[in-house]
Amino acid sequence: MIRLQQLHTQISETAGSKGQSVEQKTQYKLDWFKNNGWGYKDTKFILEQDGAVRLTGNKYRFSNQKMMKFKEWAEAKVGIDLSLNCEAQVEIPTDPPIINEQFVNAIQGLFNEISFNNAQRILHSHGHTMQEIYELRHGKLARIVDCVIYINSHAQAEILVKLASEHNVMLCVYGGGTNVTWALQCPKEEKRMIVSVDMSRMNHVRSVDRKNMTAIVETGITGKDLEKELSRYGVVCGHEPDSVEFSTLGGWISTRASGMKKNRYGNIEDIVLSVKVVTPTGTLSQSLDYPRVSSGPDLNQIILGSEGTLGIITEAVIKIKAQPEVCKYESILFHNFALGTEFMYRLSRSKVWPASVRLVDNNQFQFGMALKTMPHNKREEFMDKIKKYFITQFMQFDPDQMCLVTVVFEGTKQEIEFQEKKVFELAKFYKGFRAGAENGERGYFLTYMIAYLRDFAMQFQFIAESFETSVGWKNVPSVCENIQRRIVEECQKRGVEKEPFVSFRISQVYDSGATIYVYFGFGYKGITDPVKCYSEIEDAAREEIMKNGGSISHHHGVGKLRKQFMQKQIGETGVEILKRIKQQIDPKNIFGNQNLI
Image (cartoon, rainbow, N blue to C red; front, side, top):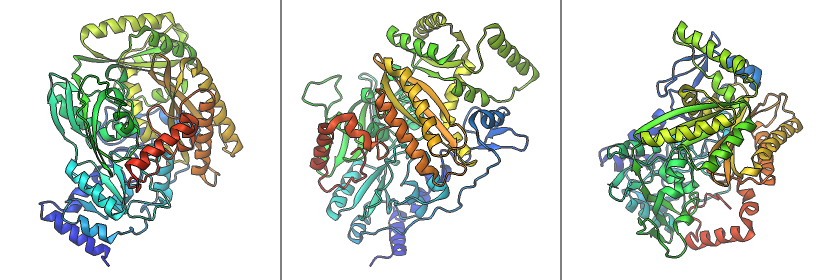
């Protein structure tokens, strides 16, 4: 039998012969990404002796600046007890890998990056839901991948899928690891060897066509790197999900993702013209970089949202746009969420849509204000007091009711001037007050901080997460009202001591409806199984969403977290169609992650 130590030696020698050791390359992401939480290793929120909260590192605009108001707000409004320090475990336990010896023998010399390292195996076996992070901090993942293989070409993907099919090995595709639907969790009962296919080496923009405004891109590239590469040609993709720093093009396609600037650049299905996919029954490769075709059902739509169940997406032809001349932040205060919602509805009817426009409720507005950094000088401090007095006393905005719309304008100077005029005219009709660029930028800063803040709260026995839905305009108020009620009721049933924190954000507008983000969390002191408790409450909230006309997801996908709702969403026949497609393309269930259905 092949022993694990022998495997390490054999594979390291193979990699070393190509000029770079396995450990040097496979440790790369773990060098800068946390192993038990979100984001950069050097970036986290910490509570200092003087009560200030500070974001460490240097990755973000507000890094290493004191936030003096957050502690008081978090204790008073959210109910976090900052005395309940709960440290994460130092080492995450693992089981030994399952080894398919014939497969391992077959792959030797074919891939120069293969790892059986336990830290690598753990990293490639989870996404970033609260439940998964809790298990990393305080428990154990029930099943993890047995091996990680880094591929660097479409040809290597074809070889790997062929060998996995021949030797009955399960493959799980890994992009940026940012999934929030349990899609990367390994099925607990899987007895076959599970190999994670890491796409991070397939991170190139292969060509850019400035005439047709298209680009051919490998799908392992992150959003941040994609824009960096495209900027050399003076163009952008423009797809910016909240995870844009870490998520990949392949992940966006497989989850049918949406970005915060979809009003200008489109959702991922609007951006992708064609995909190349390696499946167990062959490679799907279409010459479809045309503006539009009428040649039967659109096969791209089978792959978009397939969540790694059909094959490895290696390449895509995407639409690109010229870099915007101007990018400008703005914000508008409204007296309450109802007025803000009506403004968003009327804006959707006007068809004058800025690149991004988002409405946050009062809880989230206060959240953003609590993260405001200390004034740099006495003049700034004085001006802040003047602004607060003007808004609350002169303009009569109630601090416990007001909400905020944050806006990003992108385009030519003329486009932005036109959009600004129309947007602020409409806002004035709904008694909105122009609140400036700083509040707009801080609103988007909060977007990137949410996951870091979730991990910070978890240190103090407070668990929180977000989920999203899309809903018709007429149902927006009832969805928000009934989710709030249901979450509070479900928490009371389960013995949650303090009232949960619940907050809403309308993050996208459409002709027929909107996207609603829900944030909720609670202190779990005294709860025997916090993960089980939270999951049950989240499921109840999702039942309430569907009862009130909402979808199970707008852009995060289904994974294993939401698949029990799929039949209600697409019907029995719809589920059967997905099953038949899966059985035809992957009869041996090589891509057996059990997502969707």
